[in-house]
Image (cartoon, rainbow, N blue to C red; front, side, top):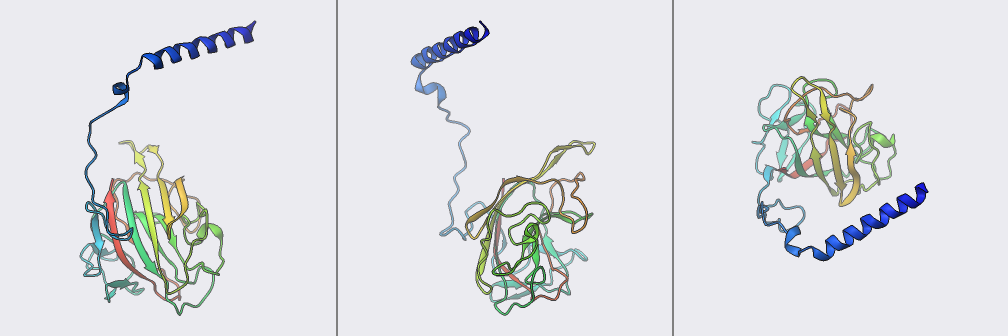
Length: 255
């Protein structure tokens, strides 16, 4: 009897929906506002669209500061490229961001030596924080025929999310990250309301698909959240002996 009642209810609902569809008008499901803003795409996937904020275009480091003293960024600028200066430490953007789309290009030196983590190690902190692990890190590393722990290889969200693929190019080649970052949200009293999420394309290959982060990305220990708001984007000067890597063509679109 119960199954009969369920079937009858299902048929009745289906009949109702069919009748509603027959009476519907196409205008009822068409919306004309708000109108999306017009954005002119770049000439190629590497070029910034018209509404992007240019963080580095090869001319200067005016959009960046040193994390050591908040003074001028002291990385090496030559031939429209910035190269990590390990003695100068990390650099980060002057401005802070919440949700955004980021494009960044990097190059591992062609004469790279070492293995594992000591091979072109750097990182992009999608939201730099002044405590704990220092933020949420997208790993930069040479994993072209170089193995390491998989949640620490290129394309990983460090120590949290293994990339869906190893899309590394050869050392000496320019490579790209395209990132969509959704920052975590907190209540006024510091309670986590929603966790951070990230999507990453590495050299055009999807390696992180709307992944939810469990917190920051510490080298030792477990991830955790602490209340914060908009945050800078930071580039890491890693303290190992591997050759310094270079960056170029960096832009961001706040969302």
